[in-house]
Image 1 (cartoon, rainbow, N blue to C red):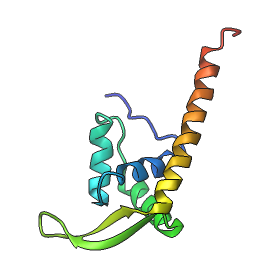
Image 2: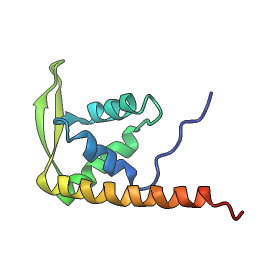
Image 3: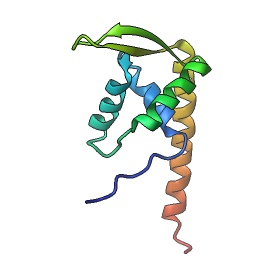
Length: 111
C-alpha cells in the first residue's frame, strides 16, 4: 500500500481556509471535504486539524460557534472571516509562487 504524502509545511492552514469559503463546517466535515476533493490523497488527522483550527481562531481568520449537527450532536462550526479571506489570498499567491519556483528547478536542463 502506497504511503500517503505529507502536506507541505504551511499548506494545512491554506486548505482549511479554502474549504471554509464554501460554507461553515465542523472539524470532521473539513477533514472529509479535503480528503474527498483530493481524491483521498490528502488526509488530515485530528492531531493536526484541531491545533490548526485553534491557530486560525487566534489569528482571527476563522470564528467558531457551537451548533447541532445533522445527526443531533453538538459540534463546533467554523466560519471564514473577512481577515481569513484576505489571508487565504496571500497564502494562495505565495503557494503558487513556491510551486512555480519548484517547477523551474525540476525543469532545469543543466543537471
